[in-house]
Image: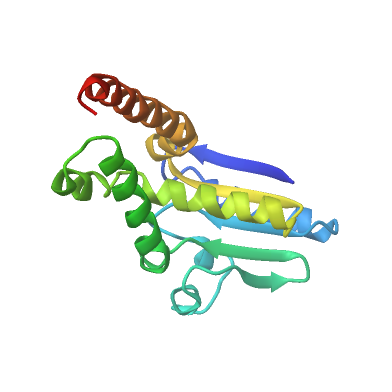
Amino acid sequence: MRVILFSGKGGVGKTTLAAATGIKIAKRGKRTLVMSLDPAHSLSDAFDLKHGLMERNKGKPLKITKNLYIQELDVHEELKKHWGEIHKYLSLLLNVSGFEEVLAEELAILPGMEEVSALLYLNHYYRQKTYDVIILDCAPTGESIRFASIPTALEWYMKKIFKLERRVVRYMRPFT
């Protein structure tokens, strides 16, 4: 699967280029998804879709032509759908790491959930071999940089959390 990322300042034509690229690749016979990561979605405008169609679709891919789909992520819908398992996992992880329950509850609401949601979709599509090409229509530059750095940031947090857990266990060992 190939991933093409369109990033840049707001108003420079990222969505237009992402849409045009998606159309061209789909015409060549590749199963193509154009996914908007911008909270101010405009893919439906670029494809001249009826107002409200994407909202009613609740963030699922919408077929445009034979090989072309578009998706405007609905992060609120994704969080509603998966919040229980995400919250449970993070709370458990942070509680195990020595944090009090109240603090764990607060820390479970992490910034960057939109980006994590997009990465989960990409991973799912990659594993399922759903598309040959995914074109990411990114938010303005700052948001795009944050999206690209999410895996590194999560790795950093996990190392810190597990490092703290090891220290707590080491200090508690003489008392157990």
